[in-house]
Length: 455
Ligand SMILES: Cc1cc2nc3c(=O)[nH]c(=O)nc-3n(C[C@H](O)[C@H](O)[C@H](O)COP(=O)(O)OP(=O)(O)OC[C@H]3O[C@@H](n4cnc5c(N)ncnc54)[C@H](O)[C@@H]3O)c2cc1C
Image 1 (cartoon, protein in one colour):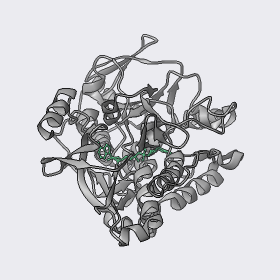
Image 2 (cartoon, helix red, strand yellow):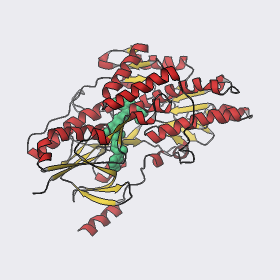
Image 3 (tube, rainbow, N blue to C red):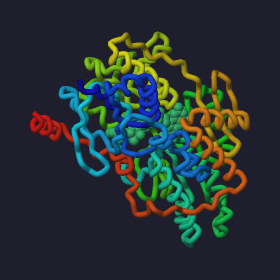
Image 4 (cartoon, protein in one colour):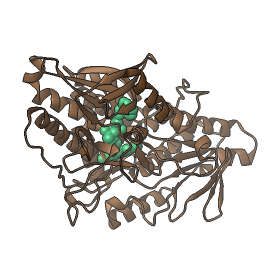
């Protein structure tokens, strides 16, 4: 009898935790060869996204926010590549390996944990000039870009060019955008000592959001405190304002104002991986609608979780009236339920429902500043920063990675930053679609051809 194959797509927060739990719960079946687990992920690491703003700001090195899969995964087979097609009828995932070979990977159970990509809007110039903040490449690119703007401004004799290069705009007042603006503002502030020809008052950070409040999930009072803190640090916050147009020299906002700038960071929302469109099923806000047991409607052998999934929130009032937000906290907890339900389905047992009360949010605003809302407590300042950092250390999956992060924090505290550009991304296209490889998926026609030639 051949082994039942469980294929897990993605090894991020949800995928990695799910594989680890499957390895634990199916130990017997795995050792008897009754089950095999294959995890497909383009990289050999899981990325701890919440610390990306600190990578861009140079507080932590890029390698330190990665969790090496060869250490974190014990028995599951790792297939380095990207699932570029799904055929639910044939029960096949099509994988483009990092060698560029495209192969069919049949499955008995499929777990889709492919996360999300930057949500693009139809704004002229955004695709060409907007910089993303969703992966290591983008964080490293953004750091290099910001430092190069200061260098170029320092070298320029044109006052308009100097001002534009020293003006930085971040779109999106959620936690990703707010942390990015706050952490990078500290970077440019401390970098000024290396650019003596530049007037420090030229450096301006602007955070823009269409909503009336920053980070609404923090609650009104903490959102206002964060806003107040950012404004006191000189960060311009423009609320109830959108973006109309972007060029390589300016951003035009919906209130008609034009900001001369060479830097636009786009963090205004995420949407599920383009992979989910291949399922041909109902999407809710771009994410796959699942049952409370995380199964895809009509497909008992397919589970979807994390940022890719729209899972009914059973803690909402009334239960299921909204969907779980796309956060790491939910992704990890959904992974436990998804793994248990895969095991239950393999063993013919009853599946359970996903229900998790939100534990709150922590937001690092750089240095000793933070706002945090853990377990309904409202914290600011150094206490919030201590809670924020303790939370990240608790949430990082490996002791080795935790140790690296702590070491980086200490090193940065006492040694500061050298403000150097790494340079290896110079000349690379900055578009988010190029960093996120969203153009690599197979078309419906290509999938049809594969199905015909296989039968
Ligand atoms: C800057 C930033 C800060 C954040 N801060 C916080 C925070 O403080 N708290 C919080 O709760 N959340 C935070 N989040 C959100 C959180 O990171 C996500 O909700 C979480 O990563 C979702 O987990 P996931 O497993 O669904 O996706 P991910 O962790 O993104 O993992 C998806 C994995 O799938 C892989 N993948 C994608 N497509 C394919 C494919 N076709 N084939 C194979 N593999 C594929 C990816 O390479 C990746 O490894 C932050 C996000 C960002 C960008």
